Length: 262
Image (cartoon, rainbow, N blue to C red):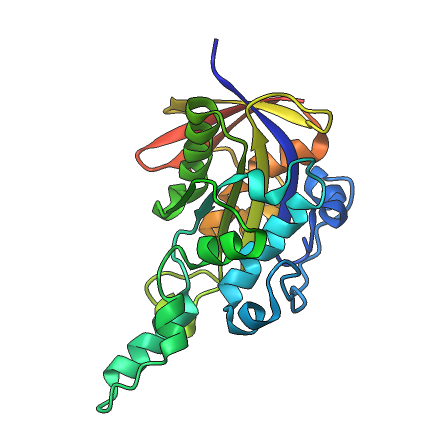
């Protein structure tokens, strides 16, 4: 029998998908998906001083994480975390590259502070007072699958409940020449090792060579393809439908097979 993870809650932040409750109909196919720019967001959990310093990628990660947390029965401080991003904070990377290309090379201390890949995880631990384990990772287009695998290891191997958040911002024009990502996308899952009263689905993971699952909705499929974190969409679509079945997600040289039991 394959080990089983349980999904307690879901969060999302993307054009036309501002949070999970308002995105279910479009994801499930019960309403047309209409891309709309995300409105500005200020993390509610961060203290004011930290809130002023955070970058757009931290705001994006917090947005989906706070959305998932709103429907979870587990206190934020009790959750281990996985923060995963294919590219990290590309706005900061761009500003640092520009600064280093100048003769004076004047680097912003705040940009330097925010340049590390685990900055969102650090801000989260400050915000919720967490002393639980945390992993920050990147795996190119397989980043969402890698985050699920890491969450499964924490839940099933270490007996922890986990918040798994995957996020990528739209690229700056200069960086988009090499890695075009035109739209932001983030999702978050609260995953538990045991079923709870709020469990919405059970997940079983396995490596496979099956073809990747696509979405037969042109607009959602375009979103899935345009952002590495949006490779989560086939699974999110199934969760929105409260359906059972299997999706295959990119995982490097293979695929991650995720079997969903609603």
